[in-house]
Length: 295
Ligand SMILES: [Fe+2]
Ligand SMILES: [Fe+2]
Image (cartoon, rainbow, N blue to C red; front, top):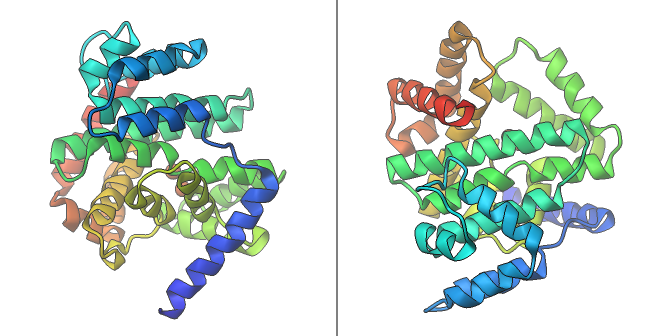
């Protein structure tokens, strides 16, 4: 085992200890039951619909998610309809989405900002994966949804966390996005002895997401995807990198976008190569997704 990997194991142990001290949101039993049923060779759709029906607020949230831009394949008005229309895998991604929104439900504006970023990144990741046919779109959506959940855990544990992050964003206002990310992770490590990527990994693992999704979350600010031996991890990481950039780009002015996009492409070359895309493709994705997300 290399020194780098050994260090990662230590990082994970540290993050697990911090996560245990915060009490990370546990995967609800109903989600676990649905997952178990969904993974059977012939899932019983009726049983899954019955399970969901027991939780009225979850049913409502799932229907809302099932009618959102990534999932929507026509108006869905019942859980059974959602399962039949979306298929089991996409339906389970919708269940995870509704459970995560419940777990992080709050009136804290900073958390709402985070949640919006997660939803937009999830939608972008799912649509990019579907269009490029590089990875299962439900897994890409889930990776986008959970990629920054470590931020919420950090906010819960460390009262000054958002203040510090806002400060880093302020002092790096003119610096490229990737530099901001590096600085944020550096600040997190120095000040809190962990970072939101590894905390997110701990949570996604405890929610029994796939190994490839867990790893994509752990390395979502890491441009060197060639280090992943597993193809799915590499593809999901590349999709997530692009989705995050597109999601952030909605706040850019037109000229700023061209400049930041070329900077981003330079740093995330391995992801560009993995996805087989050009700068024109990025422009098109950004435009299409902006229309989908912003209506
Ligand atoms: Fe993010
Ligand atoms: Fe992040």
